[in-house]
Image (cartoon, rainbow, N blue to C red; front, side):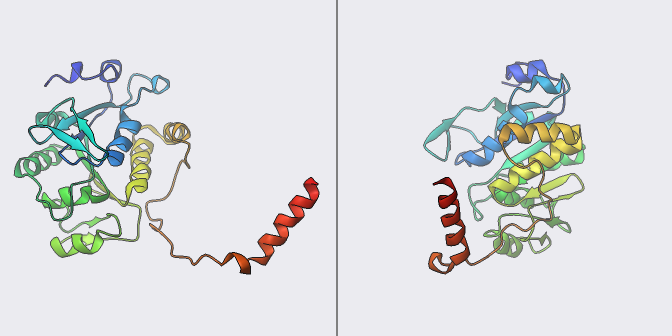
Length: 240
């Protein structure tokens, strides 16, 4: 299928930026779902200028996703040629090569003005294009060292949720991908639109990209948490 107009009812009902998520064998199900939820869900309250969404198979044959699922994409890799925003929903692994054809298409997309974004390990796909060289990028903290070793020209920042530099956006672990998608909505359609999407997701509307990925904080043993015990007893007495 190559006609955007025949992909889904959503694309027929809207005329906004086209968001394309590449689909590959070994697809990261949750990361893909984040992109589809934010950009591919019907939102008539947003008006006809809301996003269009499509998935593009970037590998031939049967495509599988985590969780024992088989995936049939809306179209083939040529959909990337028409995308205004391409979001890479994770990748197969830090040491799995990125197909040359996908690299070529992503570079061409960026050169014609499209935005490129990645969630979690999807940063390895963008890194393979060379477009992150000399730029700052985020990925999951578990992959940060490997990404830096494989691509020393990238300034890998393992401490932040997401980074945006010159139409290239990268994010940390899966939940940070939601923050990045809301950041994109906020920039394209404003704060109220991003807040509306966040409400449907039942999550906070905004976490700054510079926020730490995680904070290692020791949990106090229960038997030492005396104040908590006292408060619980007080609540029980009041209810009694």
